[in-house]
Image (cartoon, rainbow, N blue to C red; front, side, top):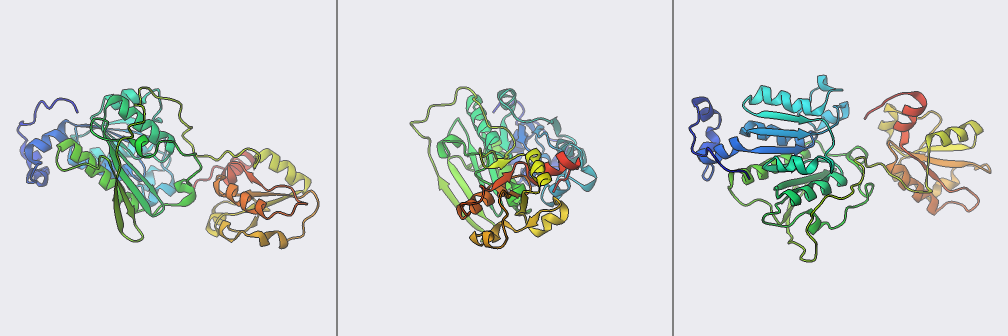
Length: 381
């Protein structure tokens, strides 16, 4: 962290009242609160995790809070991203952070970056901040964050969520192992479904995000022991918590420069098993297509490709092939929301497919892409 120029400075009467619960804490006090007031923190993502993180850091009174996120608010965000309001739909997510600071603690300066974290900006951004908190939702950004932290020596608070589970760790290149020490290789983008495909328990964001904010404040105030070299695991269904320890890999070479990272999207690309929207339309015109929608019933109520038949993914089995009369030349194409579940469905069906029928394909981009390209409709859920 940067030098500490004003740790004994006097607080105003308003600040004494605002931060009194910090001032009475052993190990925090006026010195700790002044450390918070001098801190510059970068948050990656203003979504499910970024919402509680930003809220607590603004309330704590950090000097500068930077937030980077290119996305706009959608209706489906409001189930868990508590920074945003119904009226914010269509607006940039980073703008909600700025509004919260004005309403909650006007002493905090918020710097908004409505863009992706990328190799071109990561090192500079990390070097300008005392602590970085990664609340992103894809593997590419997580590995980029860890590498940029290692290059700049910046402590990184890291967290992830999926369905009912969460993980948190602290990667401090000055004192402990990094992401690549526990997970050496970046997984394939589609190896874990996104929150849009797999879902996330809304309140879980508050549990994990609040812990991430706590870890950042511990680093800033120098109180307690951060989760350096430890991986905190939480299961919301059982309220179970585990903490695993890990060390630096002595065989791993230090990261000296940023490399190539996967695209920000987690779209699935499986060669030979997918089909584009335009090709699907040609088959529809020829009457040779069976479009199999493997989403849940409630999803079809929001957006559906007309003429598709419905069979949820968890109900697919080899019996599917005995349920219909198959004309020669018929092509079965599976479809879901964006193309992740439909790939799995195609693999399941192909495992039991009669040899006389063509391999099942998956619609690349799913229902949302078909609606956008064929109907000109933009649907978000």
